[in-house]
Image (tube, rainbow, N blue to C red; front, top):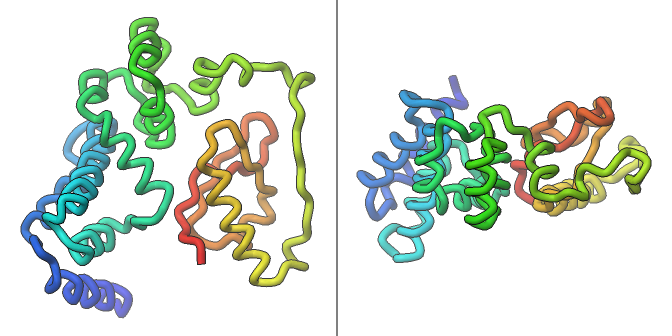
Length: 223
């Protein structure tokens, strides 16, 4: 109960400094809306993020407007997720035309957003982009070298004992994870027993290759 009140009080304080609170409330409603399909929902969320960024650059809203929006939808403005939403938002109009065939995972949509228009249309027309398309499969479609056999792969591994790391070292490790997560051709695999050491903000998925936990997205801000 205390946490809820604290958040409400925080939002109220920020809101009083907004340049256009009514606009922000509308953007927040757009972001949180869940009355349509999954793909349309994520695209609308990304459109809202792009509009926020555009209006901020045009000085139509101020820092407090952006803070109010991000705090209300639990989105870190400095996170990789925010940047990916912005990128997807840039292509939302085109994606809306194919929303019935696109996957709803924002990580996959982000990679699709990085494709050149010709490649995108080629994959759409050949029906290789489907709602079940995974990030790994997309990499194979766009980068043939990603489908190399296991015997052709060269794996690089760094081993360390989390119990022996200082807090400074752990914080630096989080920074590295943030940086590595930006590269679509790098897979960071974390042993399941090490997951608690990274705290909140890191989403993991089971690696199909190793069965270990792989970093899906990092939503932490570097200290």
